[in-house]
Image (cartoon, rainbow, N blue to C red; front, side):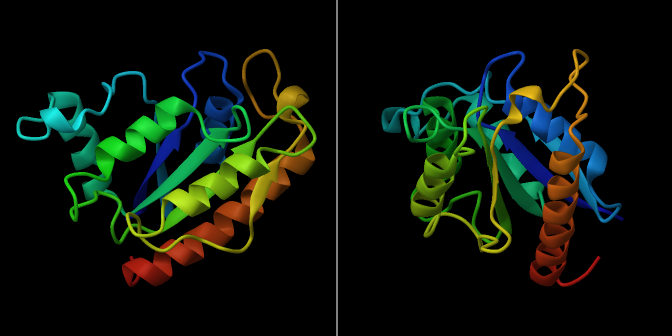
Length: 185
């Protein structure tokens, strides 16, 4: 049986590169992983006043993560950071205080950009935000996909072979990381 990995897409755009990357990763992942590509459009804004009676969308998102064997973040970079929708989802899933849904979940970070830097600042911000509310974060290999704009055809399929190879290498490393932290399949 494969490990279920919630793969959180940090963009809402219908044709988001992050969504295309996450879908490509789901197709490229080794048989030991089942990537559950998860978009964030249905998650309402975090408001601590609602914590006593959380909205159903919060509870559903938290439960999905809690039932998973790991979490992958696939994010673009907005203004040298992560998109607000991703930060909101992290805030929702990391509460209530001390009961983060991410705790104990092997975590991976994949950033991307059509620009030259590949979303490095977004990935680094996630590396700053997640400790204390997440499980172990895969440190090596790091993955920052630059020049991603021409990596997909008009059907959204990954056609840029070097990107495909990098994603496969990352997924193999992440699969080993998940296996280590989940004590085998």
